[in-house]
Amino acid sequence: MAATRARVSSFSRNVSTETSQNPGLKHGPNGTMFISSGIPDLDKILGGGFSLGSLVMVMEDAEAPHHMLLLRNFMSQGLVQKQPLLYASASRDPKRFLGTLPSLASLKGDKSSDLSHEKDLRIAWQYKKYFGEPQLNLNTNNGGQHDYCNDFDLRKPLDRQFFSGSNVDCVSINDSPNLTALQDRCAGFLAKFSRNEGCIRTAGRIAIQSFCSPQCKYSNEEWHMLSFIRSLKGMARTSNAVVVVTFPPSLLSPSCSKRLQHMADTLLSVKTIPDEDKELAKLLTGYQDMIGLLNVHKIARLNTQVPVILEATTFSLKLHKRRFLVLECLNQAPVDGSSGSSYGTSGGCSGSTKTGSLDF
Image (cartoon, rainbow, N blue to C red; front, side, top):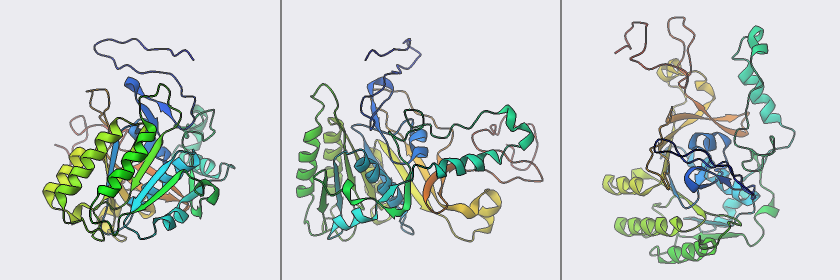
């Protein structure tokens, strides 16, 4: 398939418009390839998804297991796309975790229609005719068919047919005295997706849950853990796979936590919010529907030195109808009777024409 290439100069990014033959892969700028995170909103924030060959690290919150939502969607997306998966955790029987993975949402489009209706309510009905139909599924292909990224229903388990085959490998790191066995398993898994081959037939996924869990015997050997992550990142860089590792920074020393964050290509963190924080409820709209916050600290930059600048780095985690995981920009509640605007459309502080206590 012939690809159309954009004009390239010293001040423009080389963005390829070529489409992948594999529905689970997407071409990105500068020769990169993406796989979906399993969350359409997160794919949009990251510019397409997780870059092949990258290390994604998620900092856990000690008060709530919100990182499990990201990990479950990531694993389910790979299994639906028939992409091989290696899952490791401190559980004695990690295969049980596969039974908690979310199922594919129904094809009736319930979520899309509900979100469309909710978005339309923000526009006065008399002006609706001047706006086109909202574009919701921005990360899908083939005219709305969820081929690249699917919606998952968190209330229904994934069908066993997706993880009963040989594409899933589960590893328990509970009784391991060190990380040598896990490193060998990861090396053997990533060797199947070497970049030496000309075409990319499929991509692999590695998910490591609670890497520094106190149940592991090596949890006190911080230099050993740093060496493992450094080696894992090097192996992932030369493969067509993505590695997602969650870890609790509160259980590590500040220096070790900073080193792990520095080695990540894409760095995310999740944080819970109090149920009855009246001050925060006054500042944010839709506070009652939030279950937590997602912070994007760093986005992978492969084959480029151009930094990625986001319009917002903190997003609210919401469960739409307690079924679908969605991310939204934080919207400031109206103050003094004004009609509040979202973070993405509001102007900077220096450009404000209204004087007030918050102007500087």
